[in-house]
Image 1 (cartoon, rainbow, N blue to C red):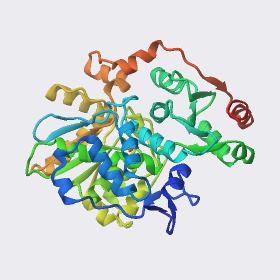
Image 2 (cartoon, helix red, strand yellow):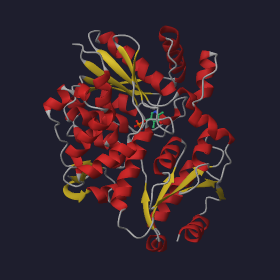
Image 3 (spheres, protein in one colour):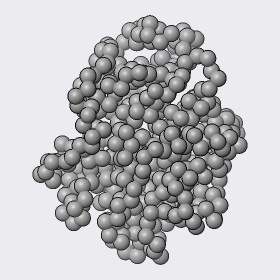
Image 4 (cartoon, helix red, strand yellow):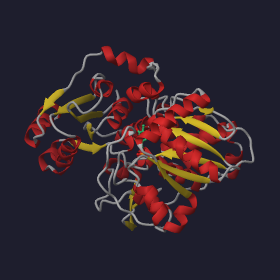
Length: 434
Ligand SMILES: *Cc1c(COP(=O)(O)O)cnc(C)c1O
């Protein structure tokens, strides 16, 4: 198992390098040299495998030559310790619930697996590893929970003061132990700039072992393939071709689906569902790719104007529009349509879907109008309580907040307040970590 950069397919790095570096020097994205085809017998008998066994099969096919199977089993067991159930609304509409992890969003899968993999590769190092993350909300919570109490690794999370929700802030600032939060008096971009500068700083690099928990890390993508298999396994036996509808921002989730398909999962088609940030649906329609600044919406985890995984999608299709659009259809919805989607799913199926999932629902509905013989799985990427204001307003009723989120409300916030000033950030790192 080696990895190349989407900008240079001639040079390879090993898995450990790709995981610790996150991004290649040339600003491409790491991709596995081969995406292994899983044994037909395994795919035909998915029902006989537990979620963890599915995950172990995939990882051992990908990483089996780098990490011994017993170690992979430990990584998978520690990372994938919550379920991914499918709720069937009717014969055509199914919901894959990806919010049963600690931070109540699908990013828990990626963050937990990455934490385990980094911890594995970090064994035998005598110097602590420091992970720097800038977050606008969701990623930080998943990373904090994923790395919590991981031996030999410390996490420093930078978030923009006053720009994350109260519960999101609590997810970042109440864990303690090896998780430290820096509340930056600035924007998300300021946080990101501080992190970037830290990686380039000679003194910091000499004193500290630094790494990132970037969303484009290959270690976050691989575990997202697991639940496509897990979803397929739970569907009723049927001759209907199966499509997946994926509410998308940076398109990591959709890219993982494409990888699952290449591994042999019989997915008939993918639906790229977005809000008004519709760069990819537009590309699928017109063949023109025009990244632009994002616009704010009520499905804000998908407010991305220049999706980072698009380079990987192109890579999987040898950069041709024709082959990509045969396998993926794009749909986009504005906020008003999204609210109507939340309401419709509740009225029709008595199911509470949040705004991101609702975008996936609308897209599947439009696709099925043209393809009534098929059935779909909508990825529900977060628990409704994470977007409680919007959902409660639309449904005019109270949403239950799961215990693991609700308990945070009473916990004491612990964060260090920081000006968006690199000198101050650097001193803090040197004084507190080295
Ligand atoms: C991150 C996120 C998305 C977007 O996922 P991508 O893999 O970036 O496309 C969708 N919904 C929620 C709730 C998210 O947190």
